[in-house]
Length: 339
Ligand code: ADP
Ligand code: MG
Image 1 (spheres, rainbow, N blue to C red):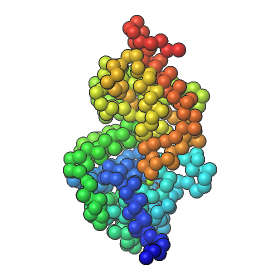
Image 2 (cartoon, helix red, strand yellow):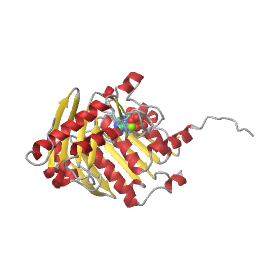
Image 3 (cartoon, rainbow, N blue to C red):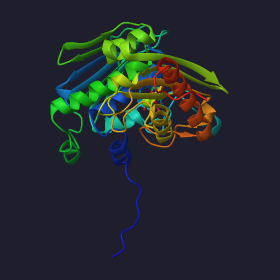
Image 4 (tube, protein in one colour):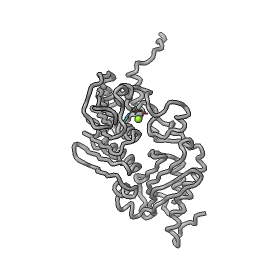
């Protein structure tokens, strides 16, 4: 009665991977936005319909994809971003696993339209239920549009896990905001059901933070900029008076990537320890930059977690940077002295 072992068909492999990479519309949006940024886009437009379930369209003015590479872009483990283990260990792009588009294409009707600066016109390819249609000429300015329609139309069991349109929309908006916060030099537009929700010009980090997190946050925020031992931290920490009952206003980035990191969370909590009641959460938008070799981003398919090579040094650096900033403005009150 033993069943024979067989290789799974590619399409099924992609659908299995999609279970990890494309948990919901917002995860597809994240992959698409990261691709636009990796392509060097300075302008990115997002269109959503029905919370992203009906439509996610991302248009950018980045480097584009050559016509002969369009089919490869939708292939699993095909990437232009790394080519060797040493490149993986030093990876500076947001993507590198080569599975984002393949996964999304396996659970949606996907159209990829692209034009490089050298191309006289654009080309497009359509993928439906794992089948690629032939590449055709198309109209598009230099750059790329990825259009994802009817997410999970061919995986009904997954589709059932989708929440209401409003909830899925909220996740998409949060994903958009997290990414837009880290790239203030890029112009972003978000439309939902045809209505503009965010229209963000290229601007300074301070203006981007004010636009996305609100004037109230910026007014209560202390700017921070420190460097030591190859580590750099910049951004804003809210003074304790702005603390939140939830963790909603905690934005922490490593090399331009939004992450949830225990080391960082602990260090920041410690830095606020003496100035913040224990059931309140500090608010911050902090951008840590370090040599890519010092952090492993290949820990999780969605890269929401990272591993630091020198996590103790990172902890100390974050703690001291934030603690010093808080102490400087709390001087005279009961704030702890920075040591
Ligand atoms: P990864 O980002 O890990 O390389 P993806 O499946 O997300 O994998 O994308 C596959 C490839 O398609 C990328 O390596 C890139 O060359 C190309 N690509 C995808 N999106 C874009 C885009 N918006 N602009 C230019 N190239 C893109
Ligand atoms: Mg990608």
